[in-house]
Length: 242
Image 1: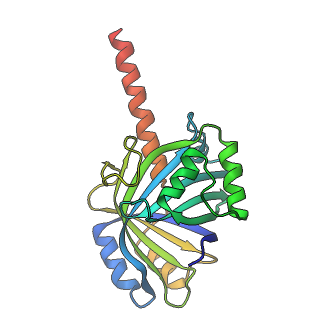
Image 2 (image 1 turned 180 degrees about the horizontal axis):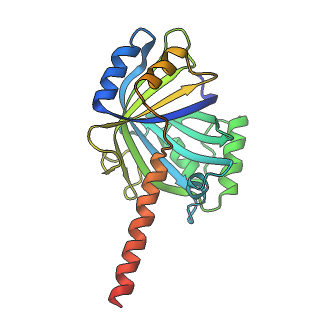
Image 3 (image 1 turned 45 degrees about the vertical axis):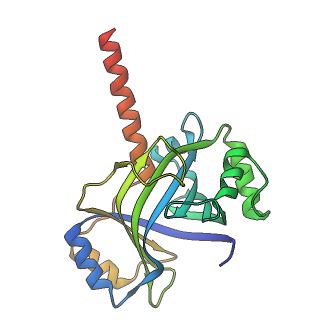
């Protein structure tokens, strides 16, 4: 597996009920295959500036937006495989740069500015972003249970189902236990369809027939909206008391 990876693709999101997910899983079995990770707990740290510039740009619907995150599969140890990701979106096309390294080295690079990851074009882009966004630091921890599949005939086609999406703003460390506040209802799943070109006809027909419609959904964005809402409510209560 390469230490540096670049993706360019379109991503479409859908909120499903448990019954919708079960039916779709059965239908897509001839077309899709479970990836090597199967079902996994994915843990992420999203990085942002002290004034939350990155997520504010994202939820404001800017033409160009980007996110910086650190990801591990499961609870991390110092030598766990970790991925530093620079995710950019421009005119609905997603471009993702990813560096694979050990968790301890990723933290030293992202949080202490140490020279602990491989030098490359992607490293240069990461260096630029880290310098551009002054004061960037871990902002939100986000984890979820993911089932991932890829197309039997088209490996660029990926379908993922995320459930038990949890977030928190304390203990921002991927080596800490997995816990947090839920984003979805218990019977909900967030499905993401990722394609390098057009969506296959069998999938288009299924989604149309079953009236499953695309939605705009950002895990970090929804967590951030909750944070802002609760801050405003708390501020209002304090002003009322005073």
